[in-house]
Length: 281
Length: 321
Image (cartoon, each protein chain N blue to C red):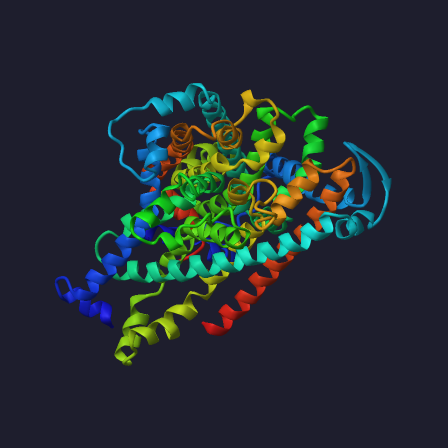
């Protein structure tokens, strides 16, 4: 096998070719992102004169404009509020259900697990019309609470999928010992089992955060007042209004994306685990 | 990627692992654990899906449901202008979008996964870099490339001109002939990290003994790939195909950002997601009935094909391994 041979030599010609290819594609990914970043520090005039130029000074004027004039301060707050609360709600209810479904077999438990798992593959957005009408009837259209409930519901299948597998792995002895000491099911769950699946909880929480932060379909339809809009849906209006102010447009892209990049840097492990769940050894 | 090994999800769903099987707590306790998730999921996800089927057979006047019209809404979808023209066209665009994306993301995703599997340094770094676009919102990726590809002030055309490739400078998104292929390329750029990570995890899951045995038998690198690695990656390819299919037939944000709600120019980038949105929220007085009918058809198609595909891949997997 050539791989083996390559490992023995110090740095071969093949190695050089591989790294050249890898760096080449890294450039295809990174250059557009860096160009966006660089252009936030240039004026729109400079961008129009030389679209691919380098910034001449470090300044954050465009970010201030996006933040204040284009209401990104409001959108950012809404995105954070809606995403964080949805993730917390989904993770909490899923942990409870996953514990029972992962640890016990009872009448209907298998059916319930498949019922939740079916949601992994369903295109739920297609149910937007009945969902809209239902939320309208209970006064949850144009309400952040409405979006939070819908988002939390979309997170349930994946969270139960991951968490039930983790709960299933925990040894029985711990729970048994606590039970002998007179602990009830809720105490066993909260004080013994839940702390043991903390890594899985982190994976589930981080992994739900990304699509919810990015979504603009539900807020576009469910939120009317601009003061309740999230970043993603705010972008759609912003792009029309600031059409000629490219410097601010680029800043808007950065503000919307930065929290995700930071999250990715902090939680690479969780995100990769979530993406590849169910694959491997 | 040692992390994936810690999640034995697939296996543990089939087998009973240790610690499981003890008689369940009394039913009120079971119910208390299950109800919050069950209610949330049923009320906001499952019930609206069921209702869509019901609504599709009724005539709507704005928000109010009127008489039962059977398959009337379905008939309207295929006879009323301009829906009768937009729907088949959008469907074909989705198919092109899916096939094009699959070709780009999987060819390069697999190539880079194989290259990364063989290197010693920087594996995690390249994986992270390649995955970054996947994490960004499709809408934002769309807007980013919208600016990049702007015919007047976009950096892409300017770079092409600067390096003497002026012939390639083109209003990529403004020309109906190149708009959809451009969007597919952008989608491939965004999605590549996803198959890359899955293929990497799959390759990491193939044991060294298997590779060693093939090597001793005198297999070349190419034979190792086609006879050993590729067949063992069948389940991974299955997962990627199904998830990409679901995602691409729900495509919305990226096309919205690059072609607008109407799939411009001249509907050349229109997809089902946009048609569905326009039918539901920019349509006439009977929009909700029509949109529900379209939702039912799209649901049957997407869910049906993905279930079928999963079954086929599972059988293929059994035969190959």
